[in-house]
Length: 241
Image (cartoon, rainbow, N blue to C red; front, side):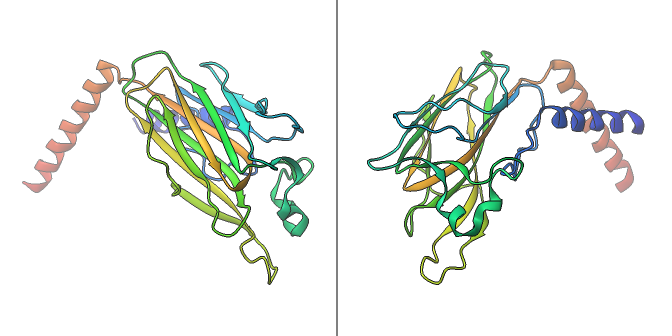
C-alpha cells in the first residue's frame, strides 16, 4: 500500500514537472499545476509595440482549452519600453537571466485585459492564479486587478502574496522597488471563459497565468474517500476505547 501511495505521489510530481514553465519570475506556482483540467500561459513582452491596443503573442504555455487573448492599452504618453527604469539603476539581473536581461516592459498607466478559455464542462468551480512583476511609476502607485467576466468582482489592490525582488540604493528615489505579485480568483461555477483586468500607474513585465477547471469527483472516488474516512473514524474510536 505504501508503495502505491509513493508511486502516485511521484506521478503527480512528474506531471507537474512536464508542463511547468522554467521562469525567472515564476516564484509561487500553484500547487495544482499539471493536474488534469489545468492550463498555463506566459507573456514576456519582448517584442516592440508602437501601435495600441497591442495584442502580444504568448511566449509559452500549455493550453488544452484554446488560446487566450490579451489586449494592452497604455495611457497617454505610455507604451512599450526596451529597458525598465530599474534596469538602468542596477536591477538588470532580475529579468530574463537566460536571455537578454531587461528587455520588454509595458509602461502601463492604462489597462491589460486577458480572456482565458476554459473546459466547456459545467464543473463546480474554476481556479485562476496570476503572477506578474511590476514597479510603481510614482510613489504610492499599485496595480488594480479585477475579474470582469463571467461576473464582475470589486476592484482589488491587495494581492494574495507580494514579494520584493529589488530595492534601489538611491537616496532620492527610495520608492523605486520591483515586486512580484500573486493574485487568485475562485470562480463558481466553471464558466466557458473568464476575463481579467490589470491596470494602474505601474510598469509591468512577465505575466504568468495558471487555471484549473476543477472537475466533479467520480462517484467511485467519492465512495472510496467516504469509506476511508469511516475507517479512520473507526480506528480513532478503537484507540480511545
